[in-house]
Length: 73
Image (tube, rainbow, N blue to C red; front, side, top):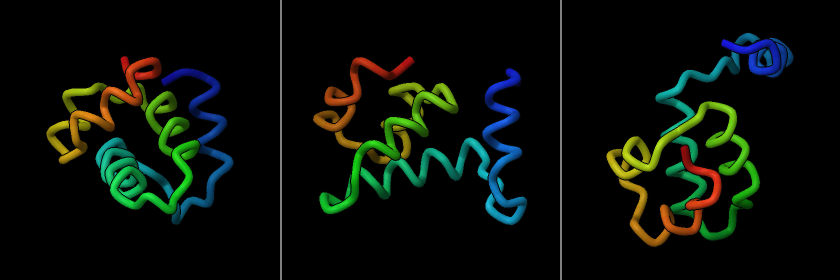
């Protein structure tokens, strides 16, 4: 884990510690709710280096994956 990622995760409350699996599910929840801002989803994808395969297995639609094309690993 890189220094920047450690710092970001360390800044969060210890009770709010996020795993890779919880990040994938949170991205899915953000994408499935049109009222939520996609900026947080963008940040989670880049922070954890999520792939299109992981997100599609979580249930994210193809259209949403295409919209994240520029930031997906």
